[in-house]
Image (cartoon, rainbow, N blue to C red; front, side):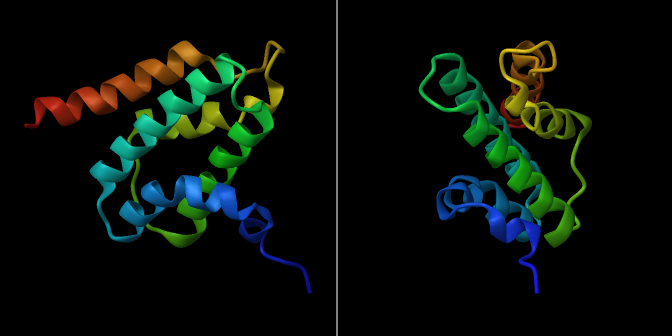
Length: 119
């Protein structure tokens, strides 16, 4: 019997995405998107600075996508979907198919800006 795909990711990957996952599981979609936005900015900065491997960054977004798809009924905004989609291209780092960090940062800033505007 094969392991579910989500179980193939390391415990560290699961711990890293846990804040987003916990919020999504409890139906807090806006807060989950805000946590995703913060995560995306941090991951982009760390990969760009060479402190995080592109493959590990890719794993974070792949695991998050699988979890949200398989385990929650959360309805994500287009910006949140863009963050996940772009993040799943970190394995192409250094090629023309790498994630567009400016797109990721813009989407994250829009998500976080909406949170500030709602205060």
